[in-house]
Length: 64
Image (cartoon, rainbow, N blue to C red; front, side):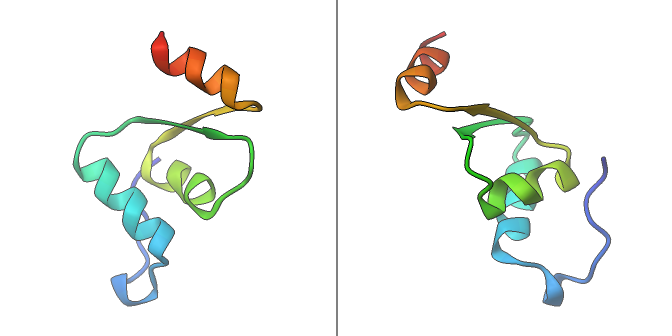
């Protein structure tokens, strides 16, 4: 997906953060399976979400 075409004045903080991550080359983000605002905004900027359910699983994924 491409970046959102809405004006910057109407952009939420989550969309601004996702856009900044995209500009810096971030393509994947890890996060707990809670639908935070960033996780909802990330796909609009071409960022793939990799969710986990427990902190132990997230630690194992980060180590890999």
